[in-house]
Image (cartoon, rainbow, N blue to C red; front, side, top):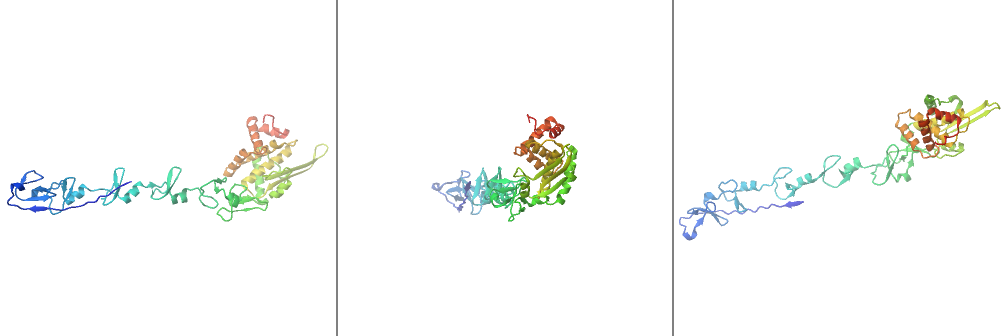
Length: 395
């Protein structure tokens, strides 16, 4: 940035002399016409002029009065000098008086230069004249960035400027909240009652945020319509079960873990199948109990019901005890068939989790069933489920 100062020093001296007798020794020559001056003359800056020849370089008119400017060996009257030496601001087009800034061969008032040289804020489009923030190659006022662009924590609302994590709903959180807040067992988000994102903890230790708890299944009045709904969808695949022969129970996580023979940390349902037959193979007594984890969001409960109903179907239609990966993978496949019939985003999320599950039985078993059905067909899978305990060798 360069600054230039114009200081005008005006010296005024006009001498008008009349002489009737001018000796040869005092011969005076007009600077304008180069002719000898016989009578009246004007002496300015040691130059002599005929009175009518003391003229302005710009307008060529006689300089009258006592004010003149002399610059670069030229004389100007007052008005012409101001015009000839006028400095205009390239931004506002007004005269510049005093100090100014030259930038890229243009002249600016100091205040005009601040406007021209300022960066535009990508958010509000106003010029930036103070400190600013650059984000993804765009410039922002500090406040514009902080209030509108910066990543903010969904829990404490403060700007996130370091490592963070997010839940399935794309809510972002500071890493520190993993230590000072509760985790929702269903969306993976965090909450505490000191923030805008709240929730509560069930008596069995499961946390649930207010968003996930909106449609949570708490009692049998909530779950009974879902039992019918899921069973109707299973009829499309001839996988429905006799609901009147099944006892449904809502239990907490502690009781569910106590019921299970093989403990599974993330278990949300469990099915027990008992039947007594006589010597001829006739069923004398049958008891089927399905235990469902209470307080689960609606779509997750639909997934759990479909999974457990397939365990019931396996008990009713298979003459063998089906082994781990084929058993659990098939039940998750049935959940997949049911979830596909819903358009909710949560159903898509649950399907995505089925494909990403790393568990060797629930996750890999499911993906093996998908591959088997794609290559051998749905009916081949049903037949295999009825007559065999596991996958064919190449699956």
